[in-house]
Length: 208
Image (cartoon, rainbow, N blue to C red):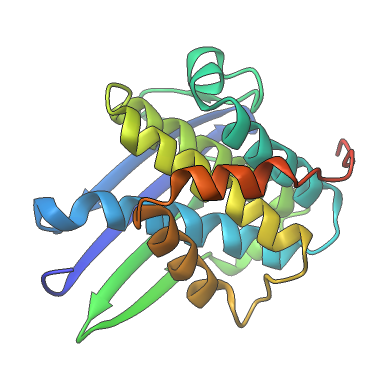
């Protein structure tokens, strides 16, 4: 990390299965990949912590485990998430998630500022799970030819699911936990982490 920066995504859903993603960054090139993976991990951690034991959380956990096991397959066919990335439209989105990661004076912050009208949407948790899935698709598609980046992103996915499954993920600990996960993954101990995840088998989950 070489200085202060921000990275923000705008995830706009035109329906539960169609979304457009924009990414805005003022990161230096040497910080960009770390920031993308941390933004993704923070988003996954936030949604899992907010949903608790609800059905969409189990669905998201299953998706993250699938990413850890078959990252290239999921990018190739997208069937696991059932969500299509689409071009930006003139039509007003049904719901928007605006996750933002900021590093200022050596301190990270992460926010997802939702309008009050969205907070009370009965499908909020379903869209919350879908927002993580589509963010993975977006980041993975952008760097489809970078096998190391995709391997790291898949490990981040699996470790985030593992933290949720083992009750290590709470609303208060989510940012610190996400930072630890991404830092651990980028330390290069991929074989050890993959071995750890092979011992992790989530519950069958609930189809929402």
